[in-house]
Image (cartoon, rainbow, N blue to C red; front, top):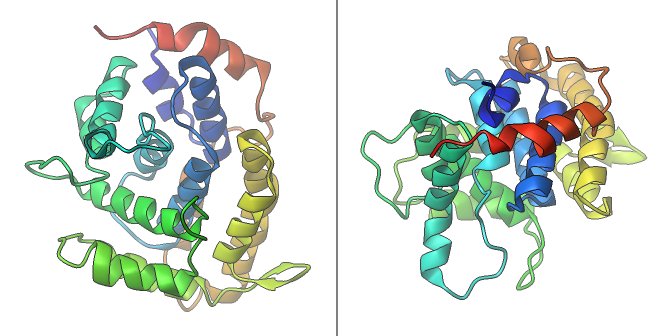
Length: 266
């Protein structure tokens, strides 16, 4: 019997994965806001443009779901510390294997893990960096260079994250790319603007999939693929689904809301 995990992992198109996760959030009332899509798009750019020996499909899926038990406003530090593990426990019940769940639980380091997966290091980087670029009630979003400094010299200063320098180098190179969007703008600044302009999650997904990704991928390939971005061969790894299937389709609504998440593990 097909589970939700089977369904989303078998979908290789990033936009369609976003759609499936969106409908899961409607069915289950899990945490899924625009910040999740924002960070997943940073994940997609990183994986598509840096030659890493990791499972792209797994990491895109984990980026969409690892924060499923996050709480937006919390005064209880213990709840903040526990959300990644609680999310992993929930994901196990809807069909994900223990390896995938351990990767999601490792997004933060509040719980010590033996044999920490390298994929958890990438989740950690994207989650922390992406969060710093966005406005929060207590502060405005940081500039890219400010976020990199804090990531490297404060947040992960004493942490052995094996992809930290690779990620920092990638972001610095990405900042040199200029996208034509009325005026020339860097990919990350354009993503922040797109995030702010979108009224809700659904509209943000549509803007990312149908506008942002096309503009940015074309700009990266045109300006930098020969010199900096050595792994452009990876671009198609998550783009082999059905790109013509409309987002937010009745089929996905029926599959996710009507069937799949009811086939749970005990």
